[in-house]
Length: 502
Ligand code: HEM
Image (cartoon, rainbow, N blue to C red; front, side, top):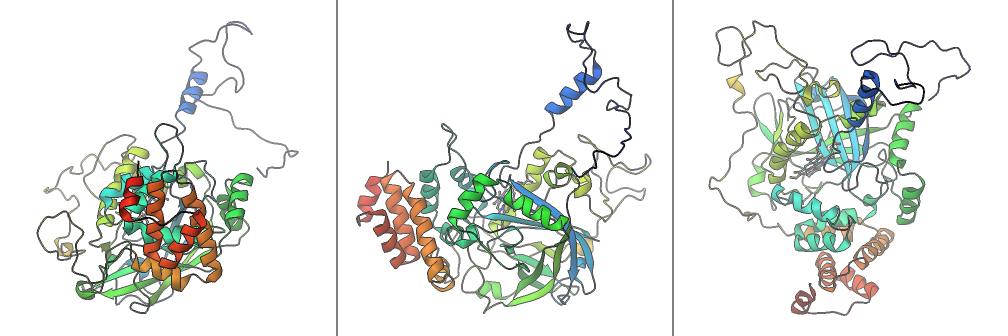
């Protein structure tokens, strides 16, 4: 609060929610000064009842976060790849962003080691485009059917309500596709110094279509103009105690001081046909596309220049979703992405309410025309004479069949439950090993070893601990040997390791 408390203040009259003036902010209606409280003190009843309903469910994941608003300005020319209106030369649109941590609850410390959410919205003239990504270019799993199990393993034990290293490492080691993301998580990127100083990634591959209908596969990269800076385990631990809202405060204060953070948006572009023969599955969310194969192409600058006026209304109630696509940007055959397209609006109908898209922060700047109606807390409605069904003879909105081919791709036909692909380099550990060996320098490698040693030493079950050593040995044999030595664990055979579980 920055108000000058010595200046004279004029007050408006307190009213009930229905606008009637009330007699007291501080005294209930009682039978005598110290007597029983009257149930017909309608303002007291309304005030207490409204208070009890101030909370909505926190997000099932990414509950702790913060956000801001800004502007996206096109600086490159990607019109040959996409017709997205917001990405055409000369375009400038409003944006929103919400940063978050994945596993912690609403009040959890910002600096716990975790992947950070990087969820952006572009308010485009053809609808809201949301790129809901992370500060890492890959993910732990590659099929949405595993997501609830993955999250259960990272959250809390049902009995004690405690987080549990055995659960985490049991899931990861039984899901070797997690190795690349866990290598990021246990590396320096698992502890950013601030949200401003981290990069953002769509992680998924999306489909772009240009004005002529030509298609391209793309991955989005937001490169921080503040640079990438991280903190140590010790700093993170100290900050978790000293200021649980360290990132939220940093972002808010930077913007309030006019120190506007920005990211340069680039894309990697893969010609449509390349996907069929590329050496690994380009829709596999546990893989990055080497920049040598698909270099970054400049799109524009994403700047944050406005803090929320009301955190709940604008940040808690924002409903970012990969299902929010616009002409020129669509979904790819990534199984995770397809599961997310269902999951987010479903979560948001429950978390915010059926008509969540009518909350001001979620309203697109383009008109909304369809036959949806009613539902809890509906605000918008059409004139009484407007038709309520399609097709109709009375001039209601009509869908455009010319758009039928947009966002389409071929698939091989049969319904199956398998992850088998035709690509030659689909190994779970290959890119994780490359990240450790070729991207991390010696100091980063040493910090990485220290972090995984600490994390795995929290595992109680000897079989899971042994499997964790094997997991890191598969990433890099020398790393695995160092971890084994640090943990003081003797080498065992696979059969012996299996016997240790339980
Ligand atoms: C939030 C589901 C994978 C990034 C959420 C929410 C759900 C969810 C239900 C809460 C939405 C809300 O209440 O508003 C899933 C499922 C996944 C998945 C089912 C896998 C199939 C991913 C991946 C990424 C990601 C791969 C990043 C590439 C985020 C972010 C948020 C979020 C950043 C927070 C959005 C915000 O700030 O409001 N996820 N998720 N999720 N998810 Fe996922």
